[in-house]
Image 1: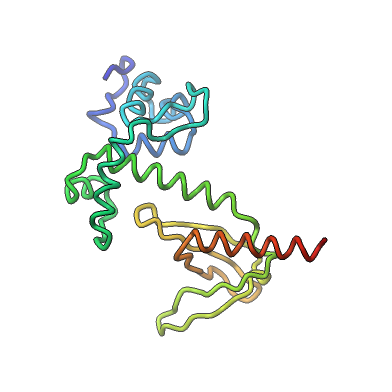
Image 2: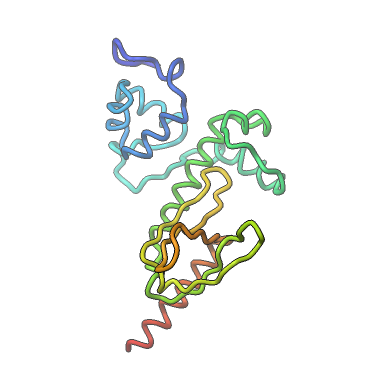
Amino acid sequence: MGVARGRPGIDRTIPQAKLLKAYEVYGSARAAADAIGIDHTAMSRFLKRLGIEPARERKKPVRLIQAERKRGQFAKWLIEHPNIRLPSSMKEIAVITGCSYYAVSCHYYRQRELVRKRLAALSNIGPLGALLQTAPDESGHMDVINTRSFTRYFYDFDPFSLEIWIMADTKDQKNVRFPVPDLDLFEQAINQLVERSTRRKE
């Protein structure tokens, strides 16, 4: 892969995970390349090898995986092995599953983007008065807390298991953790609360 004179070659010196992270953070092939110190064309070619259309060139909304064959290899493995907990390393996952590094990295990139977009689209749960159960403490005790007591909150998730949780400060506690075991059900519950709240105001 061609790179600008005096700059490191992508395949030899820079981890592929770092390239994907840079693209995710900076939002375009050009900005990511500048941040890492590589040639813009080399960055674009690298992304296209993964089936990712570089943001600075696309005319339509991004389709993160152009070739479903690449992503499908690992997705199929996950379906066939639902109860296996994988390590938090794409290289190790590729070795364990027998899938290519590209298949693994493309799959996680797409899944993380999907989770981020769905979480960002959720309504503000603070005023809804939702009752959420905290994660169990060391003794196994769990509390149920009304979201109206939140002074601030944010969503977070594990980059590999994609397990989601809410971190919140309340009027009485800080850094309270609430697991979200099923995003689909959580999304439905929030939408129902929004509908009820809207009807009350009408």
